[in-house]
Every structure is written in structure tokens, then in C-alpha cells.
Length: 291
Image (cartoon, rainbow, N blue to C red):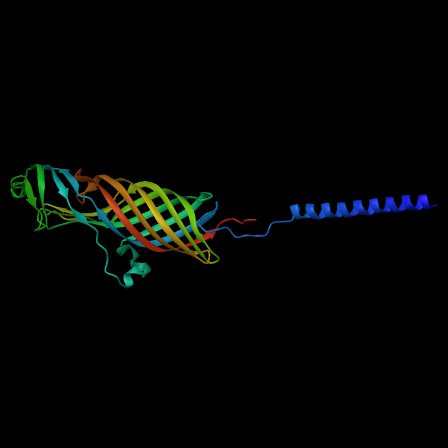
């Protein structure tokens, strides 16, 4: 009888021990299958996110050679200097009806992969030839009045009679870029993200040109191509509000600048390097749900 009791106790201990082990296994397995807690993705980082941005710029340009060709003339002005034309600060910078008056920038970005965004941009810069300069001249002009202004291979442009030359409505660079983003600071309501990339696009200026006293040419047209490299710092507050500071450098080649109001073949061409600094505000948002 004692032997049977001992055997029974041993069997019961074994069964209860197995039940405890099985229950521990079930608890551990439950941890594996438990749904992960929802975490909102960092801004400017995940596939499917988007952002929009609007800002203002300052620009600088290298010297350029401008070649003019048309009925009765074919000449080149060498090492022409130019500058941008920022609008005086005021209500014009925040009035939606006047936003094209200032030098502005627009961006719309979509993350095609984690940390990699395709960015559509409009850079509305302004280019103004320095009027108070004497430049080297090479070529010929059939009109004797303007030919005699080219003395000893040079032309003084100060009196505006020979030429005024601007892209002020403006030097529009419509571009598509690819940008990589990297988080620098990731706090609860503050993120700092930097990016770098490159872009390419076409030039769609409204060139204001007045040559030899003719009526000013002033119309939008596709004039050439541009390309750039860029980098930016993006401060994102409360996961949505973005403050962006961007620098870029690029190359512009315009071979079809309209110099007359009609459909004559008169045109100018130039190429130059540009630099640009811009700042503004934007908004980030998600286009899909994250688990």
C-alpha cells in the first residue's frame, strides 16, 4: 500500500510539473505573437510620406558670355556680370496674390523608399544684367548707329540705349530632384533632418530684353535646361510643421532666349553657374497607415 502511495505521489508531481512547464511555454509564445505597439514613423523618413514647402531665395551668378543673333547682327558680349533682385521686405512676402513678385521656391516631395524622396520644385529666381559696365564685344552689327557704339572691341552699357537684359518674371527653373534624408535629432516633438541630392529641369523664363531701342520682348518660353546639387536642414515640429534651410549650386544653359516680340528668329544664348540660398516653411504628412 505504501508503495502504491509513493508511486501515486511521484506521478502527480510529474503531471503538475509538466502543466507548469506547458503554461510557461504558452506564456512565452504569447509574448511572441503579441501585436507590437503602434509607433508613428519619424517625419521625412518613411516610404509613402509627403511634404510641401514654400520659401524665398537669394541667388548669385557667375559672369557669362551672351551671344545675340538676328536680322542684321551677330555678336557676343563677353564676361557680362549680373545680380538677383530681391523684393524689399513687406506684406508682399505673405500676400498670396503677390507671391510671384518675390524670389520664391516651391517644393512637393514624395518618399519612394525609406529616406529617399522624389522632389518636384520651382525655383523663381531673378537675373538682372548689371547696367553700369563696359564689356568686350566681338562680331558685327549692320546698323551704323549701334555699330559705332562698339569702340575698340568694347561696349559701354550704362545708358541702356544699346541693351537692357533681364530674366525678372523670372529666371524660372522647373526641376525634378532625388534627395536622401538622414535623421540627426529625434525627440518627442522635435526632429532635425538633413538631406542631400541633385536635380535637373528646364528653364522657363519671362525674359525682359530691349535691344537697339526696339520694343521690349517680355514673354514666357522654354529657353534651355538646368541642373543642380543641393543640401538642406529640416526642422520638424510636432511631426508636421517643417522649417527648411537649403543651399544649392547649379549650371544653366539657355540657347533660345527671345529678344523680339514677334516670331522672328532673333535670339540670344548664354550659360552660367548659379548659387542659391533659400528658407521657408512646409508641412509633412503620411499617405498610408503604418502598423
